[in-house]
Structure formats: C-alpha cells, structure tokens
Length: 175
Image 1 (cartoon, rainbow, N blue to C red):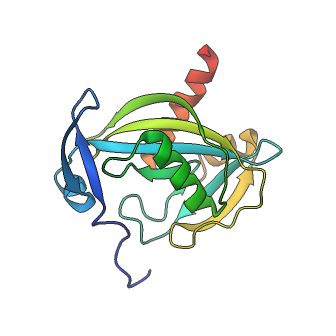
Image 2: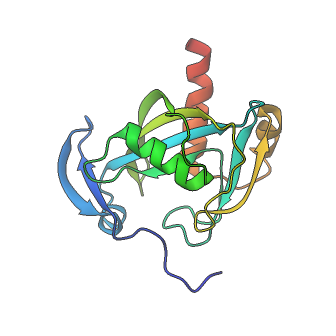
C-alpha cells in the first residue's frame, strides 16, 4: 500500500437535494464524511470491437480503493455539468485526449447507509489505444460482456459500479 494520501479530498463539489438541485457546495472530504449528496458520472468505455474497459482502482482512491470497476468516471465538480464531467473523467482515466462525447443513457440516485449521489450513466466508444491514468488505475483490460459476467462473481467490485451496471442491463431491455 502506498504512503501517499488519498486522491482528490479537497475537490469542491455541488451538494444536491433528492431532486438533484444544488443546495450548497462542500469539499469532497466533507461530502463523504457527512454523507452529503453530490453528483457522479459513470462511463462505460468500449474499444473498437465492443469490449468493455475494466480496471482495478488504485489503493489511493478516496472511496472503494483497490476494487474492480467496469466504469470510468467520478465526481462532478462544483459548477460542472454531467456531460462535461463524463468527458473529462473518461479522457483522464483512459489517457485518451479527444474522445468523442460520451452518450448519456440515464440517471439514478445511489444511496446506502454510507454514501449518496446522483449518478449519470454514459457510454463511449474508445477507438484509440488507452493509456490509463496511473494515479487512478492499478490494472486494466478490455473484456467481452460474457467475460465481464463471469468476473462479476469472481472479483471484488465497487458497489456503486455494480448497481450502475445492473441498472444498465435492465435499461437495455426496455430501450
């Protein structure tokens, strides 16, 4: 485990109500410590053949360190739109500048006893070779949907990503 501090604790976020309306701003560390509702983006990145980018988060992540995720993404900064955050996060985490704008699919409220955030789910095609951000991504691969389904029971996953993926599969059935 690294002796470095967790990432992004001082980032300023919009704090939102149960209707996703901004009510104030707070530092990310305060938002997590006090369970303040904020905004996050989840971007499912596919390569040119349709495989899904899967990665293991670094141990330095503020929440869910060292767990696997099938989405890139993160918090939406204060005053930032979901769409802008989705593109910024995808380009940063994948290490691919000039990505096409991720396509918005749906939003949902993620709530547990520890966390709460409005979540906007996107999808993007990444035709270029990825160079994942070392501060965010400890390991990565592109998996087929079948390979991903198999790994869901074998690997430890971020709970919000699992919820987003479950909702994505249900959303695809109706859309």
